[in-house]
Length: 169
Length: 84
Image (cartoon, rainbow over all chains, first blue to last red; front, side, top):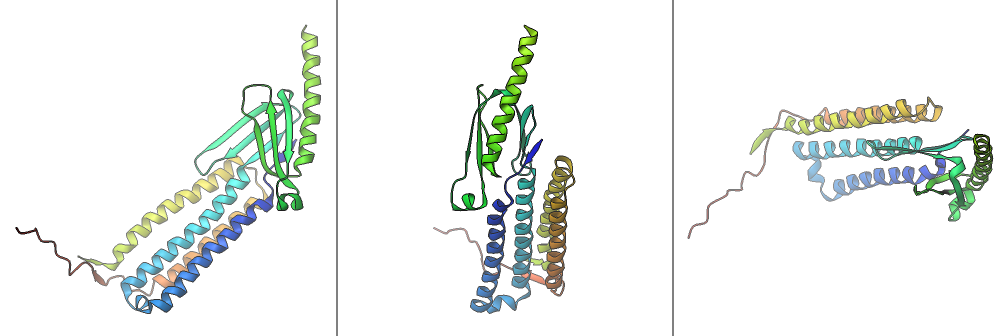
């Protein structure tokens, strides 16, 4: 059984974005301190500024944690019989789909861009014979190896199902 | 219009309640849908430590303010019906 998640390197943009948002907060603080020093003298304006900064910092921190939870709960499980696609879409939506391996017709892997090539992560597209929409594994590590593994497992599963059908006949 | 400064803490309480719901939802998802994992444990610990740290600094800045002070805003604005 393979349990796949997006490559950990795909979290780096979120970390950079977190630092950017915190830097914006610090920048606004120094800007206000220099341009409008009287805001920091009155009790009322000081209370509003501190409350806004407090709420903003907590929100940014929660945004980062939620991004991690989304990353951690998005997963794909490959067994020798089927593929399970589990997608966490925000906090209040979760989609789970399954696909029999013997239905797999076409598997494509791609590593697109300089970072994807350097760190060996990318997408794997799985097309089935049915009308079901194709499965996509987003930004998983070693996509080409995973494609090969899926093709091998699908072939084995297809042989198993064909033998089963022959027995029934 | 005049009101005591501690009225500003009511929106903060509402924010705190919503924040707690979001954090609990995150923790619920992690506990229900993912196996116990070192990575998720470490990230949750870092997150909660960060929340405690931010709350500590928030308290440090907000506590010395005089929350009983009465604030008057929009005092000079009057609305008159137009005369023809």
